[in-house]
Structures are given as structure tokens and as C-alpha cells.
Image: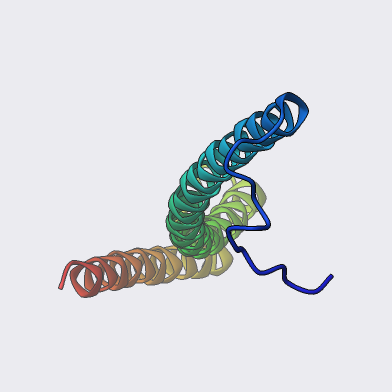
Length: 148
């Protein structure tokens, strides 16, 4: 529709009752549309702000979850290390117990298998305690890196 020029002769000085009613109706609808447009803009702006806040929270949650997963992986690694240490100690203890059972309570000094089992147990125990110390050192070093 081509634009209509607004001129004096286009709009009469004394409009009729129907024309005036139509003008008032159009004016009211234009005001309503302007208010609705302003309200819509306000709603959209509030939603955009809320979306930006939620995106920030989601990013923070994602970072926290990544840190939690990393901590869980480190804890699992430490627990696996301790499980290996305990497994070795159990194996050495079983070997020592078997050697003691084979030689009897009085065959302690005569059984070379028992002496060998005791030596193996002590060696495994030392290795296990050394591994535990290394795990503690690694954990302390990791904690100091995270803090700095």
C-alpha cells in the first residue's frame, strides 16, 4: 500500500460522529499496541538477563563438576594404589602363614622356607610402606599445586 500524504483537505476540521468514533478506536488500539510492545520488550530483556545468569551458573556448575570428577579420579588412583599395597601385604602374609603351618610352631628356626617367607614378608612390608609414603607425597604435591 503506498503511503498517503497527510493534508488539511484529507482530514476534515469537523469530523462526523462515526469518523470520530473510528479515530478514537484506532487511537486506543495504537496506545494498547505501544504499551504491549513496551511490555514485550521488558519481558524479553528480563528473559535475556535471566538466560545470561543461568548460562553463568551452568558454566560454573560445569567447572565444579569437572573438578569433582578430577578429584574422584585422583581418589580412585590413590585407592587403587592402596589396594595394590594391601594385596601385596595379604599375599606375603599368606605365604608366611603357609610356611609357618608347614614347619609347625617348633620348626621356626629349622625351616628355611619359613625364614624365606619372613624375609619376603618384611621386604613386601617395606615396599608397601614406601609406596604409601610416595602416594602421600604425590597427594601433598598435587594439593600444593592446586593451592598456588
